Structure formats: C-alpha cells, structure tokens
Length: 98
Length: 487
Image 1: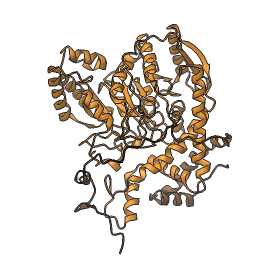
Image 2 (image 1 turned 90 degrees about the vertical axis):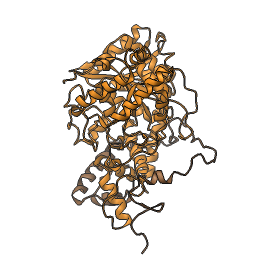
Image 3 (image 1 turned 135 degrees about the vertical axis):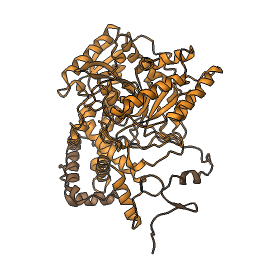
Image 4 (image 1 turned 180 degrees about the vertical axis):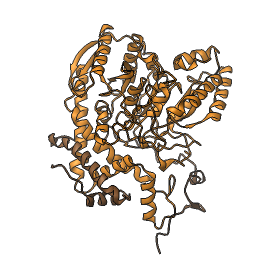
C-alpha cells in the first residue's frame, strides 16, 4: 500500500467524521502531522500477514459477561449534578427538530 | 521529623506500627513539601490538604484500635485519570476540568480499603497521550532531577512526585509505556501489570485493548505493597482476569539463582544511548553474579511495534473519546447554535492539539476503505509481536533491556517533532501490544539523570518481576538516590 499524502480535503472529511472543527489556518498543520504518522505506520505493509489472525485482546480472552441483574440504584440526580444543563431530569441540548 | 520523606513506604509501615510517628505527622510532612517544592515541579493538579489530614487522623485512630489494614496511613497520590469520588478528575484536559467524579475507581476503593491517605491527583499528558507530560492543560511537569527536563509521560506527575518525595507511592496508567518511561526518567520503580490484572473500572479510557493501571514507588518492595492492594478480579471490568492474586511480598526475597534472563538483541540497537547500554549491561552482570543465567533472545518484529501501536491506539481513542460531546458531563461550549455546533465546538475547544491529532488519525484508520489496510493489519502485526514473546519465553524466564533509548530530554526539545516523540516508546510499546507485565527500575545515571532498566515477564508473573527487581535493589543503591530538593 503506497504511503498516503493527506491533503486539505481529507483533513476536512476526517474532521467532519470526528465531529471536530479545524480552523482554516491549522488545516495544513494537521495534514502534515497526519501524513508523517501514516508514513511511520507504513512500515507495517512490509510484513506478510496473509495467514495471520488479527489479535484484538492481548490475552486472547473474550469479554466476561455478568448476570443480567440490576446491581445499582437509580443515581440520576447525582449524575445530572455534573451535567452542563438539565431540566426536570432531562439533559438539555439546542433544539434538534423545528 | 524533617527527613521522613527519605524513608521507603515499607519503612514507613514499620514506623507507623511502632508509633515512631503518626500518619498525621507523615501526611503533614508531605503536604508541607508539596507546598514548598511543587510550584517548580507542577506534579499535582489537585492537592487534598484537608481531606488528607482528616483521613490520616482516622487511620491513626484505626491503628490505635488495632486495625490491620495493610497500608493504613500511607500517603499516596493518584494519577488524575483515575476517578476519585467528589474530587476533580481531569485527565489533564480542559474537557474534564469541571468533572467531579461521582464515584471511585475500583482500584481507588481497594487502596482505600487497604488504608491509604490520598494526598492529591497528579498531572499527566492529556488523556494519557504523550511521552513528556507537555500535553497537559495544567502545564508541563518538570523533572525533579533537572527542572529544564521532562519527567516523561504520560504518568509524569506521578513519577515526578514520587522522585521528589512528594508522596510515598503513586498510581499510574500505562498504554504504551506511560508508567515505565516516566519511572525511568525520574529514577523510580514502576510496574505495568498484565492486561486485566488491575481493574480499569473508573479509569478514564484511552485505548481499551492496551490500557492498564499500576503502581509507582521508590522500591520494588514498595511497589509490591501497592500492587497487592490494587490487583484482583472486578466483575465491573469485562477485561478483568479472574485469577487469584498471589502474595507478592512473600516471594520477593526468593533468590534469582537459576533464573534464565534474556537480553533482547533488538533493544540494544543503534538508537540506544551508550551510557544506558553500559548501565543495563552492568545490571545484567549483577544479576548474573547472583546466579541468574544470561542469554540472548530475539523479538524480530520489534520494529513493527510503533507502527502497529500508532494505528491501534488512535483508532481506539477515536472511539472512546466520542463520548465527550458536551451533553452529559465535561466541557460545553458557550451558546451553541445547534446540536452539531454543540458537539463540534465543545470537542474542538475542550481537547488539546495532540488529542485531536490522534482522534483524526484513528478516525481515518477506521474509515471505510482504510479499515482493512490499517486497523486489521495492525491487529495482525500485534499477533506476530505477541508470538515473538511466546517464543522468547520458551527459552528464558524474563527479558531484560533498557526502558528508554535516552535519558530525560529537555522541555520543548521534541514538541515540534511528533514522530521523534513517538519513538521514545520503542522498548515499552510491544509489552502493551502483548498484554505482558513489565517493570522499570533505576539502574544508573548519566550526566545526573536516571537510567531505567526494564524487565518483562510472562502473563501474570508480576511476582517474579518484583522478585528479580528486589534482588537487584538489594545489590545496588540507584533506587535510594533522590534529587536535591533545591535543584
């Protein structure tokens, strides 16, 4: 796989997917940084991994599941005490539907 | 009482038992030192003066009534990525500057049950992303050995605070070397346990298939005391290992004679500082003189570790950090015009540059058309790296090498070179990819700066690592050296 040169359009696309605003003056900087990191990781493509099973857990363990039982009481008031804005038990956000 | 901080945690436990001094006196001593010395180190984000003294008093009372809590009255600090109920837990980020954790992490609960006194929360690279502690919303941490140098990262505050004797022990987290690299730079002992050995419930996530919390202290014995309290199964962490916790202190004095220790060829490459190479070889010879059997081993895919890590970690961070949206907790931008404006401006204003950069790389690696070539490929490389260790551990019991390629570098020196900063973790990252335990301990100095030695063990062999480290510390004094307060 050839190394990727990240251009301004790709930065804008990835920023959109990441839900980030990138100032116009910073776009070239992000493009340069991403290009360097992708060049760094390019080394991976020199290795043949055709028959290698991907490893997602370093001990090859699968996730442990708990019994489907309620273990905690409702703590809405405690958790909403640290929320930016709430009203009557609801989290407030700008109007979504006109 | 003016030299209490020079004692080890283990000595403090004896002294508290023997009523040589009280936990209140010890805690007050550390609080005074923090007030006097930390302005030039910046290792703490939050100091819990009143709560610490109150807790110390209750631990003194408990001791006087015969409490046998193993760490009763010992003052420690928590990395500020670990949730502490009722106390700001910022992860070094503006995003969580206003976040008062509503609960304790399991490891905090366990240490509290063991009787510790929490002095405060330590500085760190934002969301644990960094190797120099320069990526903190609260400013950089200064290395106590030379204040114009970095302490390493991301657990730089914990390491600097321990090195300057502003706590008796500390907690850290290690995703690619974030306990071991700052431990090496600051001349202390730091253990990254096996993936899943210490619960991560309540530890703010960075890269979930790599993150692990662990102890940082002056000596291997002190580290064992802390790990004993921290380790164990937690049903609230789905990656937690359900295996009994051995008595680490009971085996720490066993001899190293007959143990096979492998020197990893790839860790002594051209990029390694000559003084570090010499110090690590001297340490290996010390262990050999105690009966350990040295040999060479190879981990041929070592060069692939940084490339694989810088795909996997950003990919997982982009997913984990999607929870910060300005809605339920954390930073919210002023006067959002729409829900999209709320998300985007809260995230853009709340996150620092390195965090945004990693989110972007990770989002790219997971995006349609690139997933197979990057994320899946990195996970295949990860399998090869893990297999390298499996093969090596058929020949040897432990792998020995340097923790870092250089000693602590100057503040600002690598700030403009992201890739040079990433290469700092060349000897530590493979361990996270393979989920293994590893310890860094002081093994020398170069131009007044500490040198770290790394030992890597098999899964769940933290006890063996602590034993080898303790044996080495019985034959050396690097772990007893500390920086001049007036540096």
